[in-house]
Length: 208
Image (cartoon, rainbow, N blue to C red; front, side):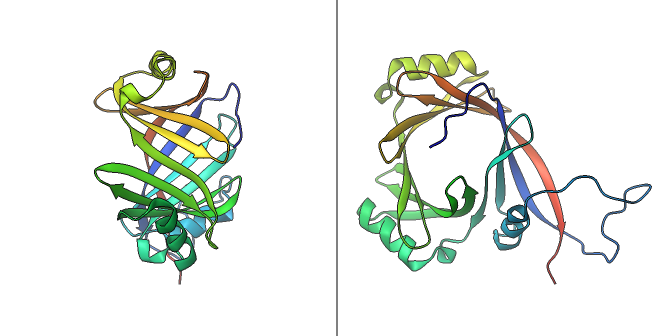
């Protein structure tokens, strides 16, 4: 798990919209193009659920740390889903994502277990990389909540505990009623990063 000091990241929750394909590409005045994105972004656009969401985690310098897209649970490889069910003891699958990050490509399976939300990040061949569990505010260390709320606008919304191997983190989420925010906080209360979730639109010509 990478610790990112001094970076404020922006998470873009992106509606997956199929742009009309054209032979000439973009229609910007003067022609030409501006910049480029990683091939993985286009791949996620193509395999993601139509009408689903894409999410990009971007540093202030433009570095993409993580990119993911909603998929249908049946798109999760059997070995990956079997591993999640074995580790979790079962539950109701409520969603799935495919993602690219520091560990390469992986899948995220979302479960409901007795009203508690769980997420499992798992490789194609069934190695569990990370688990995420929604917990009650009072079950998180007070320092974690207090420091997160000091770093973020808005009011407390939810908290999750993230476990990856021997590493434990907390995701504390807030909202001002319009905009959602998230802080990633260590067990010692250190805020590793604070982000604003921004609505965005992405358009890529349809695959032929």
